[in-house]
Length: 374
Image 1 (cartoon, helix red, strand yellow):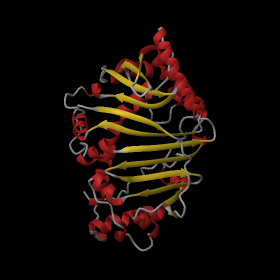
Image 2 (cartoon, helix red, strand yellow; image 1 turned 180 degrees about the vertical axis):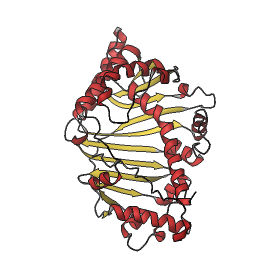
Image 3 (cartoon, one colour; image 1 turned 30 degrees about the vertical axis):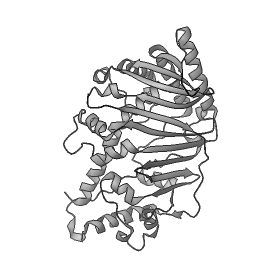
Image 4 (tube, helix red, strand yellow; image 1 turned 90 degrees about the horizontal axis):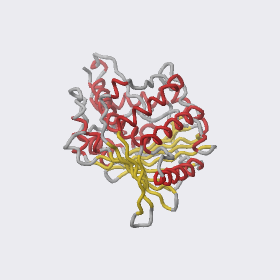
């Protein structure tokens, strides 16, 4: 196997590890974050308060929040081991350290209120990943361009693999050199989508289908989730939602099956047999409201691990003040072909290859940035 192909395999291993670790988190967070009106007097009050809080949030045209995992590297390694990964697909130590320390900041801006917005309504988006004391990578989608900058040295340390340096690039790849030096660069979003899209790729969910999915979520939460309320010491109100995970997910997918034909290609709903493998432990989400507004959501997922070595595993979402994504000044525009070619040259230079060193097809990494985010 060539070194380039091996590097590609390593990157896929890292991406797979990240996805495996975060999939359950994302699903549970989405399910328990749904608003509902429930069956008892106490739950009606809690459900209405959440419904109002999420309703007000949905009226905003710009929304910002921070996302991080409340866990440690040891718990992530134990969680990964319990999924019986194939040899070579175990989550790397560096990725476990990165995930346990990382904070992701996200901002989305739409022409319409968020709860009425489809993909084409979003006019700006920004995301920043911070870990190990610095900003590892940041990107913004504004207008026709995607803007990117990164700390190549910190990124290499976090991923456990050296990132090509600017010295490894050919002279014509001056724009990519700036990217590796931590300066802002920009790429035409439409061109990037056309270059990196897979054959047969179709648009994501429209606003109508998204509303139908949300309605299905609300019906499921109303039937299966129990709510309790309590006041915290700082004057904020805390609403705790608890539900058995397998039952909750099973009921949700039953509601979604009539919408299966409207889902994007490749998105298949699990069968009843698949769901039998899902833990039925109770999952808890704590919602913090300040002056009636949602300020934080904490989802405790430790029970789902069914592993005594997983001591702490939670998802934290903190709402922050909405900020309009802006295009960075003096960003250098990159040509897509130049960027891909320059990266390939950098990899060859870093490994010391000559023209005759490749016995296998060289496969360049896919872009990790969502080209169609705007």
